[in-house]
Image (cartoon, rainbow, N blue to C red):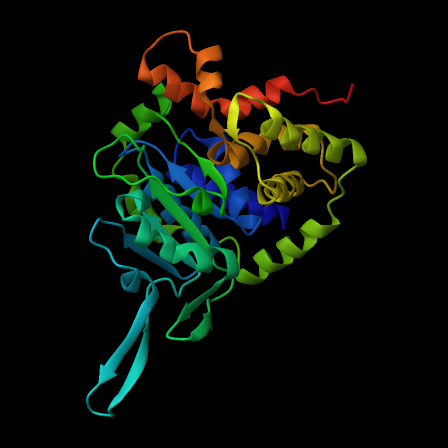
Length: 319
């Protein structure tokens, strides 16, 4: 299994250049059975990464371009009357797949965004008084633009909490950007991606996560991080129990990707920002205490680094 993980990382790195750690975390998220949120400016490679992740896992893939006029029925499907039989027949929407890419999810209205809540949490869809299961495994890979861009609707906390991780790719380094400019369009490589993981591999991997050990010292560390986010006056919205479970699951998966059956504090620190930052909300006291200028960009940077501030504030060893 380790060889398959290594091959998958190699395949993705050939398409998305210079983002080794983000790619590792993204694959960790999906291997852990979680949903992934990619947040960045337009043109940073979010959609390409989502396509590549689905390609190396060989899963049935559907894409929805979220717009302001998209309706819940456009995602979930609905009953359509058949005149020839005189009956209503259910037509499945694009959500009935294994990997759903919700492109620019925050361009849809909150009502449409909420159509994915049950699917993400329960792996099922309830329509017309009937519950329909989704294919297994089921992942949502959503991309969104920063909320200050025109025509965007911020995701509600109830939905962001359902994403195991939130990642930002950022601008490429100089060498990677040079390679991007010199090479043909790298999206042309997507049809040639080698399938490295099967649904059976994913199921086996997720079952093996239970065997990854968490020592009392590591559990104490995770619990102190969680409690700190709830008690600090600089944080308005701390981590929920679901957020705590997400840290544990992500840290176990990260350790297993390294071939270990035990979690270390380094594993927790490696996944903490990706798991926690989109769940945390800084208070006005946080801005007042840490902001060095009145520029909005500085305040935004503080929110982006909130999880790193939490890590720096909590000792690994209990006092």
